Length: 134
Image 1 (spheres, rainbow, N blue to C red):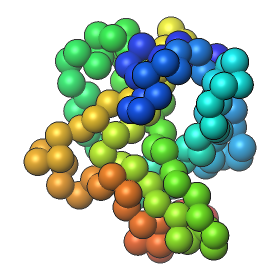
Image 2: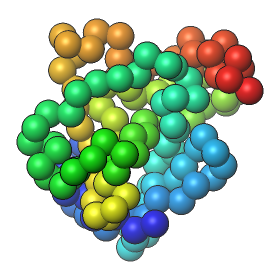
Image 3: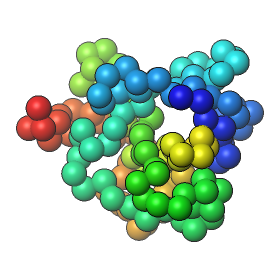
């Protein structure tokens, strides 16, 4: 599905038109519609943790034109390593997609308010939760 980045991904301010493709039920790939940046591997946070709940800042809700919570799909950037359990997940800056309006953005959460959400949390820390969900 195509999206317009209305809140930039940190470090990729020029990336505006993106394509989100599912890899499977848990993983997604985010690429530039124009093929000019590397692909991002994204993961559904619910596959790893059941405590991933946060409030979006009002400014993000407005920019993403979110009218209902159900319109939002939240995914996290994953830095993939070998073996897979050595990968890391960015929980403090999720990507939020408004599936109805076709817009998305990266929202940086307040680390004081959400101290359990890290910038590069080790995947292996959450694998026991993921395995129990299978």
